[in-house]
Image (cartoon, rainbow, N blue to C red; front, side, top):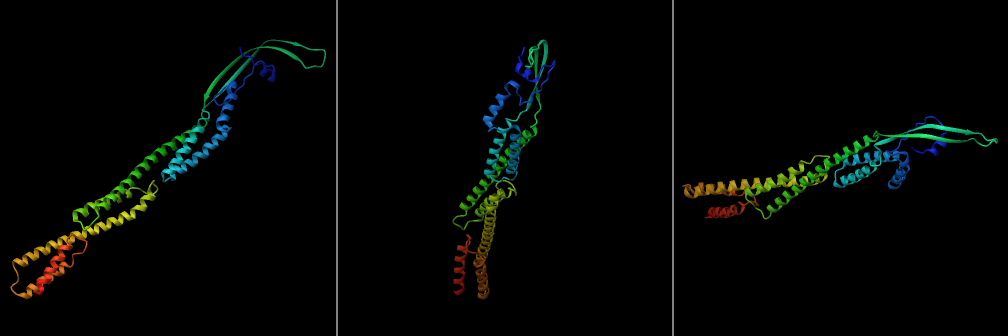
Length: 303
């Protein structure tokens, strides 16, 4: 048995009373308690206000995730998502309907001789039935938040990969710069250095426009590409100088073993060797030897 004396005295005597209470998953008795707690913990935002707040935050967060190109953007996105999740906890996923059936057992009326209001004595049987209805009106907001959370996780992995690529590119660049010190170097060394710069540029080129780290990669890429071209030029210069010097050694050895019978032919051979020696550029391992051979050839011309 349930006493609804105050409630019934307000609505009057009726054989059958049905009342539907819609609430955030709470009954009539605890609705005020929940509402008070909610107001204290959430800045007194109503459910509608909170839903509007979530909608606005979702739009802001989506823009940050989609357009974000730095870890700072993603950190701010995560902060906003946490705020969204906190708000969503207060949005109801169900409501409770309460039906009250009031049946009059007996009544007795008494009229007074004066004009005072009628008084009544009431006796009722009251049956209360409650039902929880699961109807999440904000499921689309929760789904959007989950989708953005997944996008954020994917973007984090993306950022991690690209940050690693940039870091790896810098390591290759450092190794190339270190190996390039104190030239000249043989072709094999230049080839190793070329590979370092090639790998460095390749790592940066894998970061596409719009991806996290793209701006930093674009700042580094022109320098790395230019260094790669310089090394390739030095490598080719070294290869040419080495081949030329080897050819000059072979010709000089042949000239020494089988000199021409007349001096004029001999002088022409020496002049051609000197001309070839002059093609060997400074900055190559062959240059020093080429200069020594040139001095020797010039002395022979004068002898």
